[in-house]
Length: 426
Image 1 (cartoon, rainbow, N blue to C red):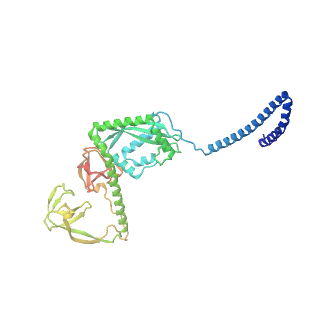
Image 2: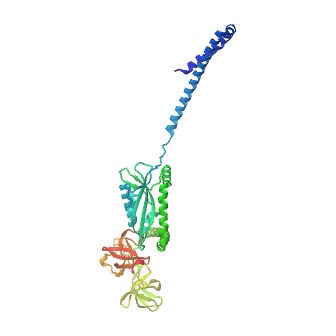
Image 3: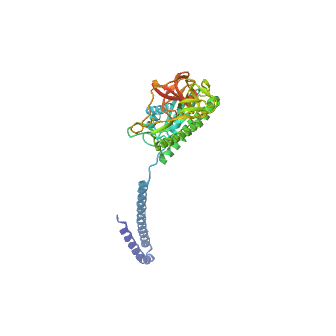
């Protein structure tokens, strides 16, 4: 219907009504009966005009409202609907298997596995995981409570665990929140990436629901009871975060020092010849030991100024010398060079290129017997971040190659070398 044409016709009709109303008024005075009928007709016509105008305005309002609604729908982002479902216990086998795999990797300090099933782990967290694994005997109990996540095939997992530490009989409870998603290949993984704001808000909202808060509170009460019921374990739980932080700082410092040393070594030119000390002189009377330790057996004493043949100057501050026809050890600080000799640099070959130094096999290395005083991890390198090769039980005999000044002991292990903390070896 063409409403503008109708409006124009109604306006003209109204003007005609006004012209005719004067004539009708005269007729009204002369014939009252006829006038009543005419007045009624006029009222009906005026109402019809008013209705047409009202209908036109209504149609305009409806059209505007429909246009506004369509625009709003087009510009509106879909909001995440927070789940109202209650916590489910061990409801999804694939999620449970992922959680078990993750916690076993925490026990083993296995960063290779963790990097495969967790999207991101920064360097500091990796160091803490590896260090913490030295104290963890296992997770004897794992219960996975889940709620549906904001994305398809995603879950918020609240992992209630019991952790067993070495040297402590009781276990300690804990609760960890993991956001578990499915990748394009259909495999579940722990999503630790930076999340979108609406996803973060979703996770926060779900974690504040009553059943989740009740779970958190129950675990916290159990944790407090363990701490107050076992002073030794409680003290360890308080100390553990400090130990982990100190270990991270120590490891970072070691890495920086190693990188600087390697850089300096690369920058240094390798000389074709080097001066080596062949004989040393005792600056004063000093003890000679059977090995490079102040606790080793004493073989005798030097006299002031006594000259000895130098067999090896060790990096741990000791020198191996020839003493009374035997090999003995003296603190290097009590010796001074007496005789030197210029020799070809063993690191440079005949054609002037640098050579790698020879490596002794395990069978060629001289060892002494030792015993492990407590359960201890075996590392590939002398560092708490070194690859974990296994464990030695308390009382296990070991072949000691060298007790180093840095707190680590080099031992024979599987036809090769490995390292354990010196505190656990005698």
